[in-house]
Structures are given as structure tokens and as C-alpha cells.
Image (cartoon, rainbow, N blue to C red; front, top):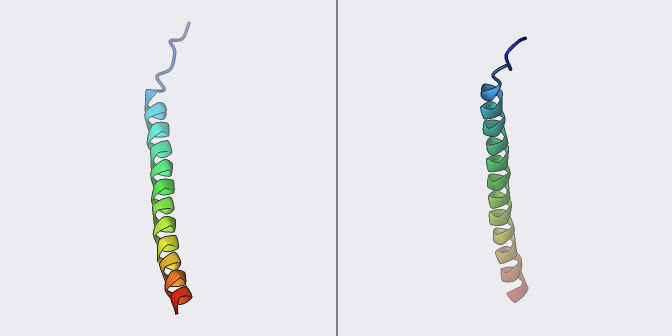
Length: 49
């Protein structure tokens, strides 16, 4: 009978990939929020004029 293969390296790699994807997504949300805030300020300044 064969022993169970050690797949812990694949598990660690999967977690690394998952956290990288989540990090990129959070960074993308941050950039979008920053751009929307700048656009809102521009629209508000145009509205006052």
C-alpha cells in the first residue's frame, strides 16, 4: 500500500496565490476609490461655479 502523497507545498502555493489575488483586488478598490474621490471633488467644484 502506497503512503499518502505530501501535497502541503501545493496547499501553501494555493494560499499564496489566493492572498496575492485578494491583495491585488483590494489595491484595485483603493485606486478606484481614490479616482472617484478626485472626480467627485472636480464635479463639486464645477457645480459651485
